Image (tube, rainbow, N blue to C red; front, side, top):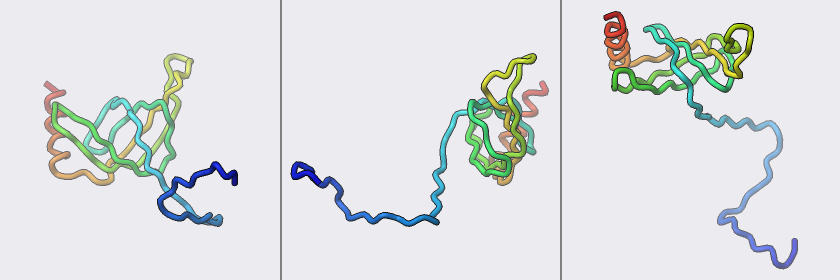
Length: 113
């Protein structure tokens, strides 16, 4: 190393051999297309892998909703015959707390009116 190099690390590091996996949860903004008590349809500029789990956070009628979801299907979003560079992502609720369930029910009833 050149003499002018100054180590900035505060802790020693070691090179890691292969075979180690790292999961990095990523956040992306999606558009909520529709919702039911069973799941939701999302529109996203990024695709997703069926079977993957994610956390969906939104507000319905001004009330927060958070649920763990599983990606069930992914398809390119189309308008006519043109693909719009977005994806439709169908998710099902895996974990939906009682407060979130009530908020969704109120939202669905208000939408019927």
